[in-house]
Image 1 (tube, rainbow, N blue to C red):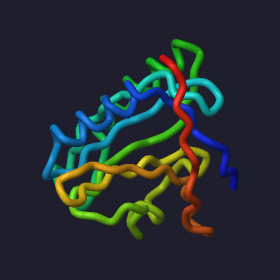
Image 2: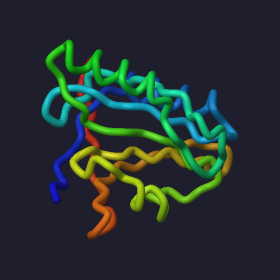
Image 3: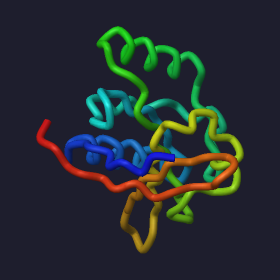
Length: 138
């Protein structure tokens, strides 16, 4: 399992944070597209479960996101979602339901009125491994 760094811009982080804040107290979720390990697009997706403890991406929005990424010559790099009430690492259901092991998962968690994030690679057999994040200019 790779533990390479994920590269994204501060604007990408701001986009994700705005989205998970807008979804609060429900989990927010979305897709990260780009090239190699460098994020080019943050694409918010509706959480069809409207739950504070689980998410399921809207399939139509998910397909539209995949097509946008593919049409631009990119690839799916990762998925982000929030844990409004903790924990800062992937939950058992995140690990169990992860369908794309090569994707990086950025987990946003809300603690003491602040949003924090951490990136992971998830494997249903191994569990999860933290991934570093480096910032690049847009």
